[in-house]
Length: 259
Image 1 (cartoon, helix red, strand yellow):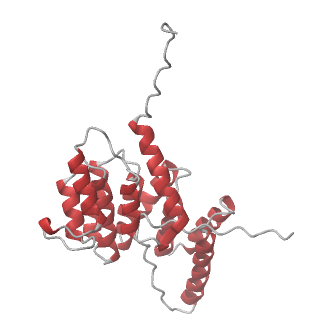
Image 2: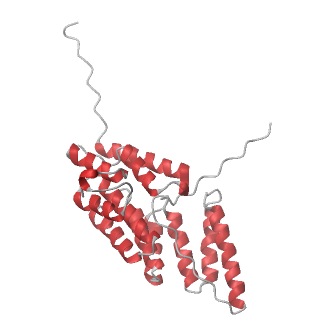
Image 3: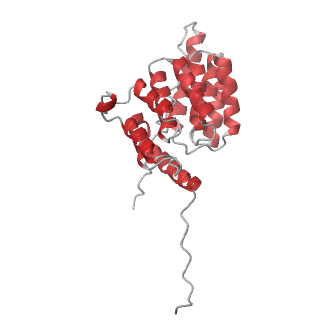
């Protein structure tokens, strides 16, 4: 009928909901493939699923930033293939308001850290925290900065940061890394029993965690260190793993029940 009302169009989800979906997809990807995924691949996936894209950004800026972050050659910029530190810095500085910029900063910091350049890595993580305090990956930058402090033997600063991070992010997928960082700092200070309690407490509260193998290995290393110290032998302090987006362990495959 002419007077019959047409159904109202369904409104698209708000940008914040799109962001949540994108973050979930990225995290599920990382949880599935774990540490075997290179940081470049993780960034490419993040860009591909449209992480953080908001309508008020100019499309050409988004495309240029995403293209630069993809690692493909860009002749007009005299850039060859790959994600070099210079290229990542260029993305972060030239396109700071695009979704690619914070990801570039994280990748840049991870590259610095992996080559032992802890101060530039720390500066990159801190810049991320200052520019993007509400970003979903802000906890990753905070944790990365603490890893840099730990690797630079600023144990007290790192320990205080880990102890602040843990209660501030309950249930976060990065919180186990902060717990392990706390244990390493306690170990570095010679508090081996306190470090053991930290690991054992994690196992009790997370009996089915994919990190179980890592924790049990750390406990074995603590026992070896304690025996070595009893013999007057010094043991090197472990350095934290690269605090990047590839730190989730691959979940263990459930056993197939017998019929």
